[in-house]
Length: 287
Image 1: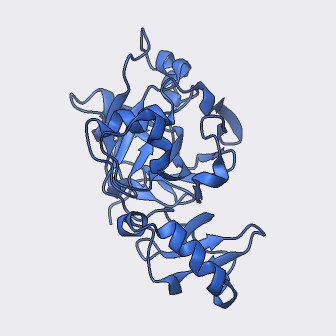
Image 2: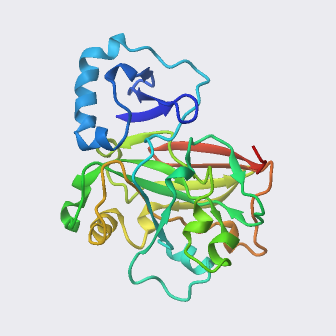
């Protein structure tokens, strides 16, 4: 299945895209795509419900806003420098021997086509196309061989980063990763059965129409099963949690000279089988 959420920010409703492209409002199912939904085998229950109720569901009218494809999870766990070329372009002198782990505030979540807000006093807002893994059931001390059994599905994520906040402000990376609109997710959560091998998907990003990231998830240093198992040794991953798995080379930080977002820039990105996103950069303004 392809799950999506639609409507005004923080008022989103659940939807499902059928194989023929028809988009259904499944609000009548009575649940959002949140921790409780995934923890109670919501994917199976929703699929069974659709078998009997799809014909009575309204189609979502064209022109709707996509929201984040999952409701705000308990945590967004991020993996840094998980593609070799990106690690070197970021200044690393050797590849990480274990995954670099950091967090991103869940308040950064937004829709895949929402504007990205360049934070107040920012001069180094950067982009990162990434594969996001959505956890389907509670995971603690998971064996790598069984790790994919804990995956609900996958989605496109743009791990926006303010590099000065991240690297020049004397603290953890989370400060440069958590501004509002810095985690567009979606448009879809594509269930694991439809994606197949998530470690062999093309991913790309363009800036103002020029392709600057172009790679495959097969180039990840630490791949999805290992990451799930590894993280579960240090924390319990809850249903609906999001693991974002790192970005390939082509970020602004690695360019010579460096290039960062300015108001009016347009970022487009996508991952094979998972869909595409588009964001226009705008300057922060007080409410």
